[in-house]
Length: 265
Image (cartoon, rainbow, N blue to C red; front, side):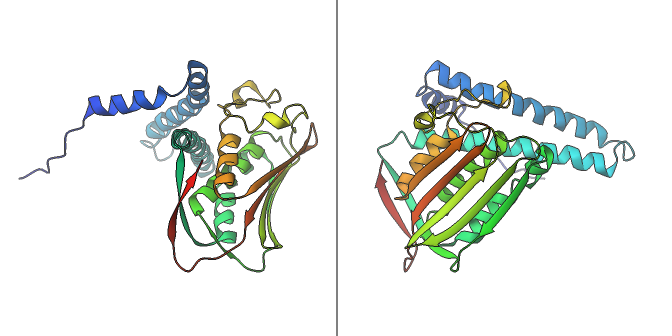
């Protein structure tokens, strides 16, 4: 019997790459990242151990209870992925330029897919989520990955800063050769003196549902950078205890074939 030989892991090289990455951040920034990761990792580990133990007894968990556990697992996995993606994007944004992968994408489907990924999180928080499409034409030229990360971070923030029975509305429309993507919620809002700072790297506002909800403050920084890279604009309207509305404006055009575009940051 023969066995496939796997390539050796260059552990020292991987460790060097890791230290090179984290070395770009000061201790406070790293602490913010760790503090945001820890609760999610603890939850995922705890759920994994529980599900592993319960799987040995087919009669130990009801279907409803198992569904609840898996939804919790999925929700925390979504948070974990968001943190990792944002950390990697922060690293890329340290460079002087960024590569866009442009193609004609179905904007409605692209945004709707992101909205649907929050179904379990919304159900868990008992918050309503509505998607409204005012587009006559669905296709635009854009970097789909960057666009979806923009929408994901905006919805994530709305979910994070809303309470039971609050509403989140995502809408898209086209006007005067511009695309407008709006994420609006009835959450806790942002104080007026903090509005100019919300796109600062690692900025953490004073308002929060709980201390555990405080993340590393990278989401809106990345959103703002990606919007600029896509040659767009971003508008924010917010009132404490009333809610927040963030609107993204992007150019509306099509291209003949997919292409790469180098953009200076």
